[in-house]
Image (tube, rainbow, N blue to C red):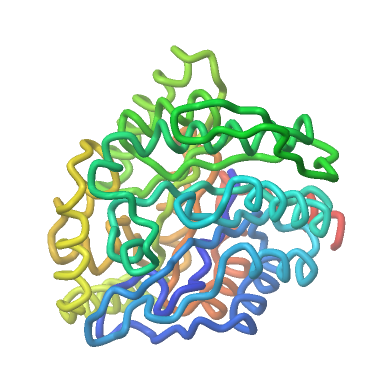
Length: 360
């Protein structure tokens, strides 16, 4: 089972609370996090695309690093970790996204994957940039994403695209040099339309975990059935939060403290944005349907406990047929080091990355 890091490249990471550790959007910190991850047995890192903050008392996501340039730098500052960068497809031209990914693929010696973000649940960040096509976009965004992806694939595989679709039309659109091998595409959508996109274009799916291991099992089984029907062997990466402390009681109290002090301004803003999206089964519906605890945890399950308890719980989560878990932490560097020294050695469903063994 692979374990990765959902790196907090936007201010305060993924816990929307007034009492959670305050995390700056700092490249020095992201480098420290990823280097600590490699030293302590993590296989990959994913960074999000954030274009505007969420208001509120904590200034949640008001500051954010740009994902692709960040991953280009991390490609040189890491040795073997797989890196997943994100682009918002309404902001970045497909030819530019293809070229950026091909460049980072060279820098990283083939360790890079591209996460395509169609947007929709947070229209305000696109409205202020004058690139939001209107709320009707939510009805066709995955068709738009499919055409975008086809142009990217044309450029990677052939060096030229003459694609003629409903949303993109090109003649002799060129890019070189082509990647020397297949570059993975990651899809972060959860709706039926997003899954249809995934079955046709993507190599991995990125999901939020919510509802515990049993609920996750149902999601994975349904996802695998859809992949089998499409004749694809795609597996999801799943985001999961971890609060680790010396005792189970201390860890549970730490998470409860975050939950008891939510950033209500950020939550109200996010609910308002998510409610504009009428698409069913996707991220917006998940955000609009969770309670205050779910919002503090960014619609992602968190496990808490001592190192022994965390190891046991991760072994339970690892029983599901997923590609890996992207872990979220309150205190990233400290918690990552504890994972490597105190948790992974206790797990039965953990295997060290090949690169870590080679560099030992």
